[in-house]
Amino acid sequence: MIGYDSVEFEPAAPVADLEVSNPVTYVAERGRAKIDSGADISVIPDAWAAKLRLLPAGLVEVASFDGRITDLPTYYVNISTDGFRFELVKVLSSQRTNALLGRDILNGFKITLDGKSLAVQVSDP
Amino acid sequence: MTGEVARALGVSRVTIVRYLTELLGQGLVERKHLGRASFWRARQAAGQASSVVLREEAHDHMRQLYAERDAYLRMRSKLLGDSKYEGRFVAVLKGRVVDADFDERQLVRRVYAKYGYVLAFVDKVQTRKKVLEVPSPELGR
Image 1 (tube, helix red, strand yellow):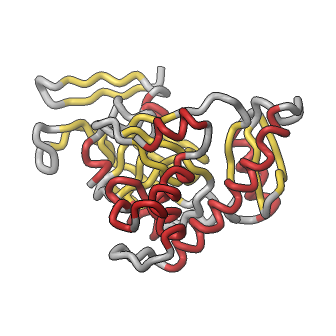
Image 2: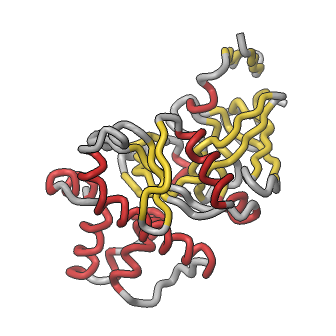
């Protein structure tokens, strides 16, 4: 499901249901991701990384909204959303309860955000 | 600020953090300021107990990751001058480059297929250093 969530987010935010899995064991975790066109890379909660027993595979410097730069480990995962599947996607993990879908994934789609009617249209033209 | 100093001096940011920690003490090292990876490295350098307890397994993973990253950094200038590696992604496992490819996914797929699900350090051999932006405020929560 892709749409706006006005319960968890205020103001309402576009979200997508997501399945993230370990690329080798295929152990999976499901949850919700905020569609975040400002994020260069997708992010999963630390709790998911721990449940999936992901192994870090790199380090990147990440600039936050306030310009602060931190080093964060990266992981490779498989991601499925709305019938689309992406293999070995490099993601970050952080102390969040939901995931972020960044432009690394979003740029593969045509996405229309209709804030007036809180609707999202996604297609792969 | 540590990132800017590191760039100006041409060393890694964790090196700057480590020296600052040694100079100024553990009080400087707060997870919310440094991020998980930097925090781990600074805690190692400071050698003191911390209020933040990382799971033992995660701790081992970070130690391994930094060991592989350090090995990569030691080889980096050689790799940059080698046409077999420059501009490609490389996988470093147990201190040596085990595979390289222009396609990051193909490289990771091969490494996991050949060695199993192991902790390998993957990076692109290039002079340009990239800082990713994730401006959502919740990232730091």
